[in-house]
Amino acid sequence: MTRFIKTIVVFVFINLLIAACTKIPLTNRSQLHMIPGSEMLAMSDQQYDEFLNENQLSHNTQQTKMVKRVGKNIEKAVTKYLYDNNYADLLDGYSWEFNLVESDQVNAWCMPGGKVVVYTGILPVTKDETGLAVVMGHEIAHAIARHGNERMSQEMAATNGWCGAGRCPAK
Image (cartoon, rainbow, N blue to C red):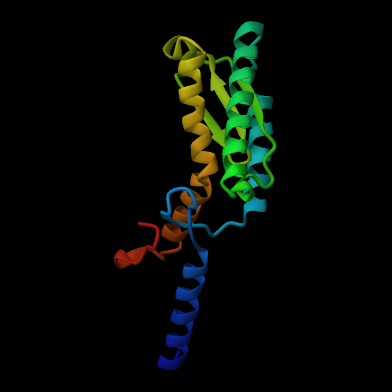
């Protein structure tokens, strides 16, 4: 390959990486997003459905209602805040769901698109709705900040050798 063609390839590649870098509106931090949001949401929905099919939802009505109530309250607060501050587009494609899954794991998570799972094992730690709201709010913040896309993009860049010699734009 001639030096001219190599230069063009490098130039095009750098421009693609720059185009994939975005600023998070709330924090103004740069992020690498190489996966279209619609693709992230489709993958998230599929993985979430698979997870729910493979794991047992809690039969504890009181705890399940608490998770759904806390989730809906956070959803309303996040939606209002983002709309009031002209960031409503961050919620494009969101279809909120809140589920409590039977597991001893002390964990909770939120997929892109607002799909939230709380494990029953974390409830003794959270103790009440306030503690649960802290955990769920934290996990939802990851989804709103599009950390899933960022992590997958970083992995794609690293896997394809784009991050060698300190060139990774996501670090």
